[in-house]
Image (tube, rainbow, N blue to C red; front, side, top):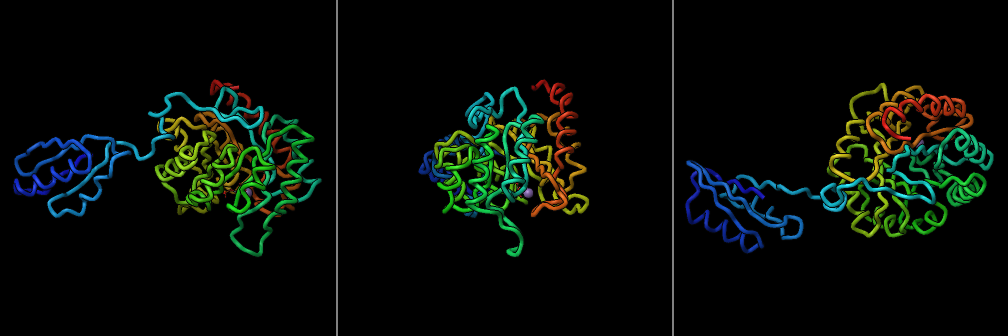
Length: 337
Ligand code: PEP
Ligand code: MN
């Protein structure tokens, strides 16, 4: 920590600050300037008591941390990329993983038809919401447990592992019984008790970025997964809210290289929620892969026009097949399979 004192602070007031720094378990190092002094406080900021309390002292101008607030998700803690396994699918390895399926599970026919089509086109994880976080209580809320059972049936038929959203702590065991990856949605990205409940199931957790969440807040939310003894964390960028109206959200692709610098955890991009428009999904997917994304999460529906949620952004089965064909050279150019 760097503590900057106000100009012309007396030596008695300076000594009081040095004493408090020692009391809190740090070693102070005083650097006297002409008008003001700066104190370097040496110690582990993450395990000692925080020196933040000094901000309230009248002779202190600022207190600046040097160490990162997140520990386990940081690259310092784990210099190599980590990988996350869902059944026999590895995310974060050499292979770019495509997770595809409808926004919501709507019927047996819809989920089975989609599951077979996306698998045949090269997807290796099936997505589908059974519990849906809808802005309006009058919109389709998902099939709940019935939807989970349909997802399990689709896995039995196709072999694809399942990713589905966990909306409530009360559903943690039920959802974990059916899912291979638990999705924490954008609206719950800082619902820490929910994140802890997801982590405690032991299943991998895909943590979406919140609608107005800074990357540091997102990394700290991810820290709740790793600090609850679950190493299966995936970060998923799905667009943030800005002033732009041509897209539903602004997909922040700059989050990819930033997360890669800051963290060892795999990065997933969801261009479907990001754009809110099916016609942009191809370009955003290519960009995401070129920039180092480890996986894509894509909405695909056999009849997007009739989808019960997010109809404007879902790819048709044909659209998905085209996308998979066009992505191939981008995957190769990124040095991936
Ligand atoms: C979804 O994946 O369908 C979804 C609701 O995502 P988000 O939480 O990113 O809005
Ligand atoms: Mn959706």
